[in-house]
Structures are given as C-alpha cells and as structure tokens.
Length: 87
Image 1 (cartoon, one colour):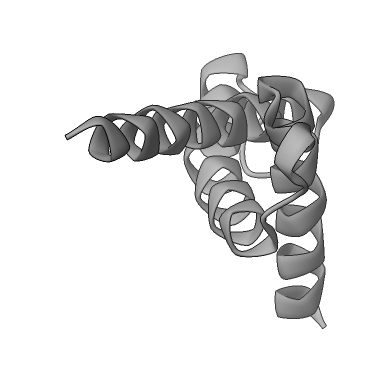
Image 2 (cartoon, rainbow, N blue to C red):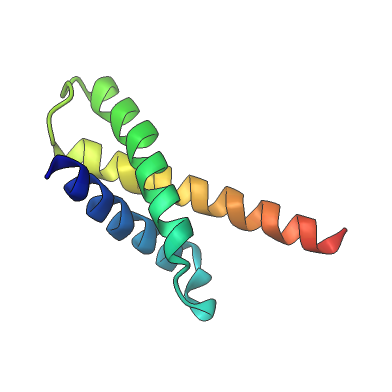
C-alpha cells in the first residue's frame, strides 16, 4: 500500500509542478509527472525535512520540498527538451 501511495503522491506533485512551470498548454505528460514527482519528492522532500529538523516524518516542510524538487526536475527536463529540438 505504501508504494501505491508514493506513486499516487508523486503523480499529484508532478502534475502540480507541470501546471506551475507552465507545461499545461500541451497537457500533462503523466510519465514526466510520475518521474518528476517521485524523484523530486525523494530528493527535495528528504533534504528539506532533514534541514528543517523534522526527520523522516510527513511534515509540511517535506511536502513543500517535494513540490520544489518536482518543479526543478520538470523545469530542467523542459529546458533540456527545448535545447535538443534546436540542434
């Protein structure tokens, strides 16, 4: 059940990151949402939670860190994708 919850949370965070970055004009890329959400949640949520002193428990700082991490992954992917199209 935990793995399903992590995947669903990753999808939601990744979709929110795409809406914030501005990829919503082309629709939500669910594969990117899953990867950005899970990767961003792991890195961003873990770093922010540890820096805030919350440990590994579910806290608002971890959720905010997850969203920030997903936004960074989505923005980096969009920049890399647009750069590869120009070449």
